[in-house]
Structure formats: C-alpha cells, structure tokens
Image (cartoon, rainbow over the protein chains, first blue to last red):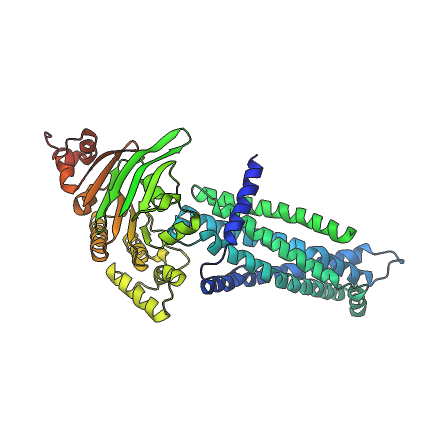
Length: 247
Length: 251
C-alpha cells in the first residue's frame, strides 16, 4: 500500500514538473546550468573509471583466452562488447546515480527543510517544475555524450593496457574491436543511458522534494535516492535487454 | 483586505486550528500572537495556501483563495511576499540574485530596470553594498533584511512575516519591526505578522489577534492588550518575571 502511495505521488510530481514552464528564458538558463552541474562536472570521474575499467577488462580477457582455438583478437572483441553493451551505459549510470542522484536529493531536500521551496511556492513559482524539469532534461540530454566518451576511453584504456603488457598487439586489438561490429548497439546503449538518466534524476528529485524533518532526513533521502535509482536502473536494464535481444 | 472565515485544521485526531475568523485590513500591520503550538503558523500556512483548511475560507479582496485550483492560486501568490522565520534565501544565489528572482520570473523588466529595483529594495531595508554576498556570509539580521527585500521586490499587495524577530537581538528586532511598519505604510500593503515577541506587539501591533489552543481568544490593538481583562492573554503578556511586576494588581 505504501509502495503504491509512492508510485502515485511520484507520477503526480512528474506531472507537475512537466507542466508548461512559467518563463522560458529562466528555464533555459537553468537547463544549461544543470548541463554543467550534472554532466560536465562528472566528466573527470567518468574518464578515470572508464580508462581503468577498459584496462581491467582487456587484461582479464587476455588472461582467460588461453586456448589455441580462441583467436587473440577476441580480446579486443570482448572488451568492445563489454564496454559498449554494459560497462559504459549501466555501470557508469550506477556511478552517476551515486554522484548525481545523491547531490540532487540532498540539494532539493535541504531546500525543502529550510523553507526555500515554500518561498518559491509563495512567490507563485511552480517549484517542482523549476527545480526538477531542467535537471531531468539536462541529464537526459548530456548523459549520452558522457557515455559515448566513456566508451571511447574504455576502449582506449583497453588498448593501452593490452599493448603495454604485451597481451595483444596493436593490430590484433584493433581488428578485435572492429570484428562483427554492429552500429545499432551504440544506439541501443545510448538509448539505455537516456532512460537511466531519467530514472536517476527523477527518483532523486522525488526523494528530495518530499523530505521532511531535519538534516538527518536529508541524509536519509539522499541514501534512499541512490538505493532506489540503482535498483530501478538494474531492473530497467534487464527489461530493455530482454526486449531488444529477444525480439 | 484578507479575510479568514471559520477556518479549521486537524492533523490526525489533533485539532490545531478551530473555527477562526478575522479580517486583516490594508495598510495595517496585523499581528497574530499566541504561545508555541497555539496554531499561529498553521493559520499563516492556510492563508498562503501551503496548507488547505479542512473547513472555512480564505479570501483576498473578495477572491476565495482557498477554493482556487493550483494555477489560480499561483496567480494570486504573485501579489504576495513572505518573510520566513529563517529567511529562506536561496543558498545558491547572491543577495542580488535572490531579490531579482521574482522579477526575472514574472516581469518583463529589462536588466537595467531589474537592477534599479534591486537597488531600491536593498536601500529600503538598509542593505546597500551587500549585493554580491551569499546568504551564508550574512548575519541573522542581514538575512532577515535581505529576505524582506526579496519579499517586497515584486511590489506585493500582501506581506506575510513568520516570526520575523526570532533569533535576533532586541536592537535588531526593533530595526526589523520598524522596517515592516514602514513598508506596510509606504506601500499600503496588508501585512500579517506571526509573533510571540511582546516588543513587536507594542511597536507595530495596529491590530492584534490572540490565539489560545487553536481558537481566537481575543482581538484588539496594541494599546488594548495592556488593559485587557482576558485572563489567558494577561498570562501571556505578563509571562516573564520582569513584566509580572507591571501586571495590573502585580507586585
């Protein structure tokens, strides 16, 4: 019953958040602010993790493929498939659920308990729309770019690690990452990313917006936002994968 | 003029406000006083639409606010300004951006006109040259003044102040009270102030409503407060040991 209450309230909040903006110029400015806040500021951590994960995947693949029946370029192939299909869209989104999700929930939660949201409401501002819509749109817009960069850096990390350790030659790795390449998988991964971005921002905003109490509750909202975002991302990943790969 | 008619509010099985009616006149500072938990803030929240009354009506110049839908309420709210207990300034914005926020959101003013309005409002609350400071860099009194500047930025018809003196020293409290009175008179606003500060009652209480256990117990002005025979109000007014000595029939 409590679960249904939250689902209902979540969709009602989204309805309020996606009502007509009260002033486009203010919203546009807020959108670009959020693109920077949510997207560009996450680039550093995403780059570091992608390079290292690419290296790790390549090393593990090279270590596992000891049979003479498996061509060595399979290392590049495996790295590409892992990075493009799962690591970049899903694992990086889980990482962003922690970084961006907790940030959004605590920001909006703090505004709630310090009456800043009430202040907006009393001015006649649709606070849900002003605070939430630019965040969701910004994340849905910028996250695919972040993930595309993550894919590139992941493959680059794999190349550097593979060649530096002698696990594969440069030529074998490049042949591997080109082998049986299907471009729709990139589109599929970027679509997933946008969907996950929506989950991260909307779930975090919901938890922040309905915070009540004090600083302790802001912390709890933030934790709840991250936990639920992660669960929903994994669930959505399973469903999207099932739909795309079995139909 | 703001009217509240027979408004009540219950949370669970606890009635916080019970059948309260009153009129708050334009160009006057209307105070709602009472002990903690007497329902003052609940009434204020019902007046501005943050809570919906279980029964009764809130009316702004004849418009039944409490029965409007969200969009209609947003339109009426553009005529309101509110000073919150903690200021409720937007942390991520400077003083100037806070004051400019309602102007950028709801007016078609040019940047030059907005700047002029910001300077006018900050001058009014005697907060010049603090434009670029963030709320975290302001003292308690400055925060209240900046919040007051933001509240009057949109030239509101109705001004609400929720415990404007809480957490302030007596001298700064007087400054804030003077400002509220001055702004109310200058702009002919309908001002509603929630307080339990007796200095404020005496200084700006052009109309005073005393709440007791969620009910309207007494109504009058600041001069009548001291001569009342209402026992509960007398106990409230002369609560401190110092003031007890001034109580009629006291030591």
